Amino acid sequence: MITPKWLNTKCTPIGIRNVMLFLVDVKKQVLTYNQTYDIAGSDLLTYKEMLLQYAEVRKLKRYIYIVPLMTPKLSSYWLYFITSTTYSLAVNLVDSMKVDVIAKPNDLAKNWG
Image 1: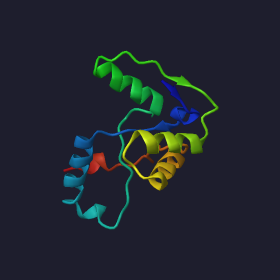
Image 2: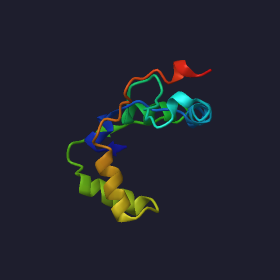
Image 3: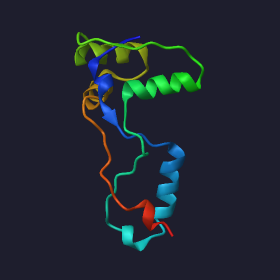
Image 4: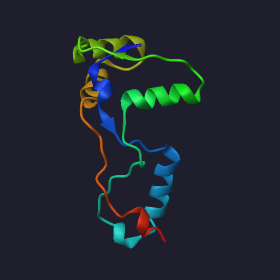
């Protein structure tokens, strides 16, 4: 697979089950009212690493080559034509992929009672 350079963007992914646990437990705690928290898993990964880990779990052999030639506009068109998304959504998704998404540390998990 030939991919754009934003596949090197870092993130702290979290599983949907963990998101649900946070949401259920937080609503029971008064100290969390009117507060905001970042929630994330413990791993710091690039999008490329996440794709390769997913392929490994699914027992798929994949190679990812990052090239600097794929512009955001070209990536947006590719996403628009390959998926069922709108072009404006594709542009916004591609633009957001260039920003590291790393959760700010907090004590939320320690406060579960």
